Amino acid sequence: MSIELLKDYAVVVSDQDNLAVVKFPVSAGQILQLNGHAITIAGDVNPGHRFATRAIPAGEFVRQYGQPIGTSLGIAEGDPITHANMTDDVPVVRDLPENLHTPAPSYLDEIEIPTFMGYRRPDGRVGTRNWILIVPTSMCSSHEALQISMLAEFTLWNEQKYPNVSGVTAIPHNKGCGCNDGSTVEVLMRSLAHYADHPNVGGVILIDLGCEKTNMQLMGKYLGEHSLANNKPIARLGIQDVGGTQAAIKRGLELVEGMLEEANKTARVPVPASEMILGLKCGGSDGFSGLSANPALGVCSDLLIRAGGTAILTEVPEFCGAEHLLAQRSKDAPTGRAVYELVDWYKDYASKFGGVLNQNPSPGNKAGGLLNITIKSLGAIAKGGTSRVEGVIGYAERVKERGLNLMQGPGYDQESTPGLVASGANIVVFTTGRGTTIGNAIAPVVKMASNSTTFNRMSNDLDINAGTIIDGTETIQEVGERLFQHLLKVASGEIKAHAETNKHREFQVWAEQAVAL
Image 1 (spheres, rainbow, N blue to C red):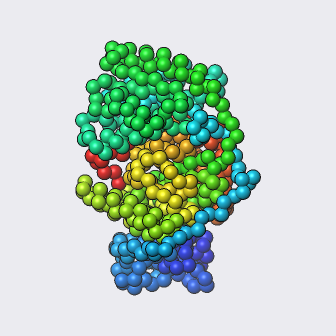
Image 2 (spheres, rainbow, N blue to C red):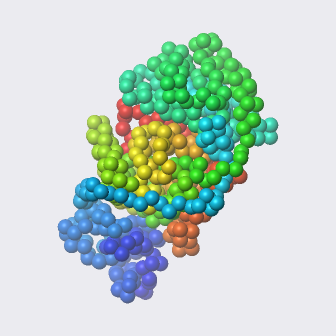
């Protein structure tokens, strides 16, 4: 068999690594040359999976991204790396100097900051969209909320008549009654209220059944106590009060019709990119996600932060095994300790429900090459780029610091993405290797593929192809810069994300009754 260059078939991420990640199927017996040394592959290796570039004796760490991802049980040069010859054991790192100080990013001069066309709200915040939003206070009014939004878009709203309104949408959910008091109710109220108050929303209709725990009275009290949604049109509708489902839908449509004219008065204006708050998310990841899409998103995040913008990283289960890297690049020691506390809280929380974080990689993740949570986490945190960590917030809590922030939350897409938006993200980038189609009710979700095969197969759902990095036709930096320019156009409304065109408007709230890994 001929000798081929390793770089044409696989990727070595770091000089400290003792493995390579395969780009294309490699058969047993294939000989690949690395730095003048010929490596004979001992078994078939699928894309996204790994083989050893040298012998890794039993007890030695197996390394990718320059970090331990497991412990060898005895791996020969050229061996495919699987759970048959590697355990998931890695060292626990919690060192943090008391005098930790990570320098701030090198910010652009004001004149260098790019702009986009956004909706400037009375409180100064900026939206990338201008929705009329129907907010059910519980699952008991979610059906009516969805019916009102769908009928209103079909019969009342059109882009020609209301060019400044993005449409009419709803956030049906399965929470709000028959639940425990305390944090369960608090998280739901916070999530719903932050959607109602979101700068991507130009008008709100709150709807309840009337007898549920999280009723209109409680929602009104929460909004008032937190001074939320008081600078936009807001209406209230009770299903029991107006006489049932059909009456509520009829009344809801009347309210929407009156609100459209008011919302349409707000037009886009030029705003600096510093007003962009970017949610960082991944799902349906594969072995290429951490090599292409995630680091390219990290470049984009760094570019935005240099322009004075904000990025929010979540999926705390996918920090595990890599949390020390986030803690060590925090702005100071208290913030670094808060990173560890974020992860420790989630581990304790998951254990109460029998959750084990090393079960996080899904069957699809594993089939794509993510053998354990450490590999997945090291690749996942690449979405946060290299900027220092400015702060840590709870799920759906409003982001307080410009720059990179970490939000408590699960890896489950349908709950973590809404949490990012509730925290203030006015646009989201979602990287995927297997092909995830999720969107959001009020924020555009730009989808970026980690490999060209998935992108080409699902080009009507995925917006950006980072597989060009694996193909060798673009660099990580080039794709990150291309993504940033794309985001400015999406934020301006020049183009829509495919998730918007396909009307993906997923919304759920992370509740404490169950743990989603």
